[in-house]
Image 1 (cartoon, rainbow, N blue to C red):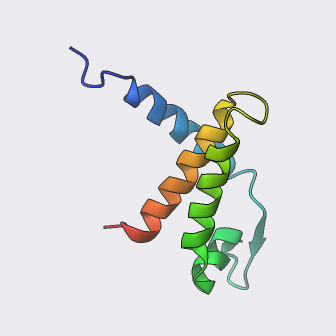
Image 2 (image 1 turned 135 degrees about the horizontal axis):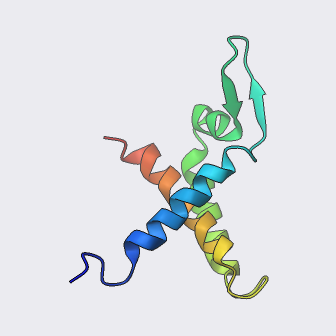
Length: 92
């Protein structure tokens, strides 16, 4: 018997692969030390990340099935924002 009855391992790998591709797509600036700074870093620093992540996860779930049909990318974006939220609040 497979350890994952509903192909969760496959879907999580697909989400991981998607998230890895996003790092070359983000708007990035460099700070004075040469460190890359993303909008996420600013949101975290300003204390707005949690609401932003929750709002975007809801947005992508709400538009699933409405914009471009049952667009898998909307689900992947939702998973990405939920993962960022988990990192923000449960990075132990």
